[in-house]
Length: 165
Image (cartoon, rainbow, N blue to C red):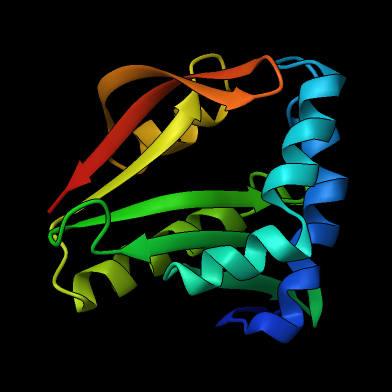
């Protein structure tokens, strides 16, 4: 069961949308409402939104096990400042959690960030998301707290986490 992580192009962005539709309703069912999940999927994971992410400099990685997509990551180097990278997205199918796929994606983002001469990685994560443990385990720490208005009456109540090297 070989794991391959590769960068995808615009023609494969549908893989991110398809995986998100499978992952988000399960991953966030105890954290945010189904209405907010639906809203965020439609605004952040549509083909148009992902194409805009690419135009804005995001890189998308797909993790495949035996040629089947099982997870993805999206990140941006030199954001918000030259020495930073931002991990915007990192998700794996629920049935593949705790198998090393998320860690492999995370390490790939860190490696790519270092190659671009970034010294820090940041991300936003919901304050009650169990993924906090994953990020702590991978060396990240809580840098600050923030609440973001994402429209339609919804907010994201997040920690901004950081990894320095």
